[in-house]
Length: 54
Image 1 (spheres, rainbow, N blue to C red):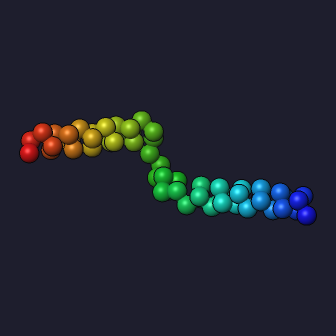
Image 2 (cartoon, one colour):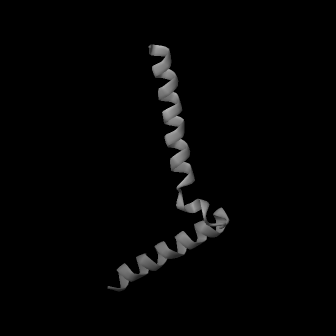
C-alpha cells in the first residue's frame, strides 16, 4: 500500500511540474535574457520617472 502511494505521489508531482512548465508564458517568446533584462530595466526607469514627475 505504501509503495503504491509513494510511486503515485511522485508521478503526480512530476506531472504537475511538467504541466506548470509547459504553460509558462516565457516559453512562447524567443527573447534573449539580456534583452529581457534591458526591457525590464527600462520599464522600471520609466515608472520611476513617472513617479518623480507627479
